[in-house]
Length: 172
Ligand SMILES: [Zn+2]
Image 1 (cartoon, helix red, strand yellow):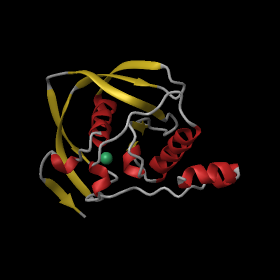
Image 2 (cartoon, protein in one colour; image 1 turned 180 degrees about the horizontal axis):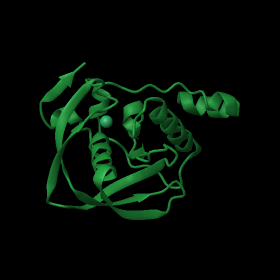
Image 3 (cartoon, rainbow, N blue to C red; image 1 turned 45 degrees about the vertical axis):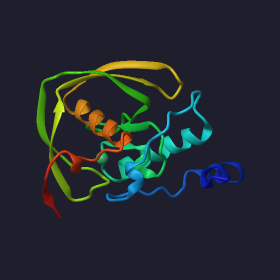
Image 4 (tube, rainbow, N blue to C red; image 1 turned 180 degrees about the vertical axis):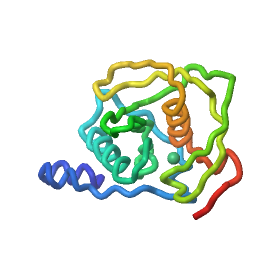
């Protein structure tokens, strides 16, 4: 049985919140594996994984985190680009339905590539479809920073990293 299920079935809520979750780092091959569509309605396990992903994203000062970065090859990611870090968003089974052909380059970092920076060319707007935690279909056009983060996280769930986009500008 999966460790997480074990905790859920046998543990208390307190134990649940303390599931150890670790950010996988490049060149871990798990980051390159195919990710699976997430079943709707969302399982208790996936709900717990998402809560933990949000927690880890904040702890790591990240603005986005994909499930396969913490060891779950599932098509879901979390994001919070707000200044106050109080608006976590959850994206399940996201699909980019269209992309602006106009692109812009900017420097990106990644929690799975610590200390590295790469100049990445991204579409200036994208249309995304996804399911929310309640299984409802959502769609939105993203611009600016959220647009970049969504494309970065879509790369993750498609097994791609910033280092695939160009040379590493900085290494700590
Ligand atoms: Zn990343």
